[in-house]
Length: 314
Image (cartoon, rainbow, N blue to C red; front, side):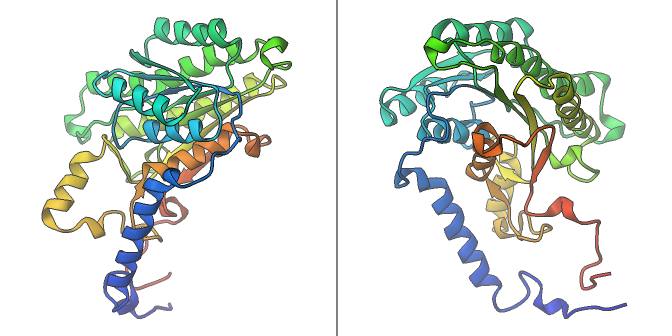
């Protein structure tokens, strides 16, 4: 049995404060980098749908801005809560001239709404290239207090929404329109899963089951869609500051312990939505043209290890 000096771990050594300052600076730069970054063309002329865009600090919102920054032709942005949608629309269109933006207040697990949204992209732009099924919901109850209704709500919002995205986006992505620049069927479907769907310890039982289902949907459907040019992948975020995790972060800020949030992963910190958006961009673009049926854990390395005793490697 070997060990190391536990006084050297993050937060207990003299370098802890310096590391926390570096992390804070890095996260601030990540959240504002589009203000100075040159425009890109990774999604040039692509027509994209993103669900779950309503949170001001959410992954969907950050992804919408990054997709626009990388040359997307049109964005269809859906959320059940329409409160922030007008601001999102105006912010995008003012920042990116020529970008077509449509914001839709609807339920991502409503079959009729998803059918209509995919058809609208075809009617207005003759193509659909990317569908990022990001809408999600998390409960707070332990097993004893989780009701059947809560369990099915998690499955509906988190898993059914992804099934509908795969089913109807894939049909739209098979449509070609050479006059609109799409000569061959292809597309990228991206699903937001979670480290809670990989193994225990990252969420309640209903949420974890629904996110495991999301990962399974991607793996199974990628084979159902073989030889169509359509890829299906998932992103499994770790702890990210979003509207869903707002209470956790507000509580930590009140206690002055924000630097401890996310300390269990090797990077010793939480993530911001822009870091997840960058992975969504990778999966949406041709940079990932041979990546299919895969889950990418974006969790600071949390899911890379079994639990360990502090102060011992093994």
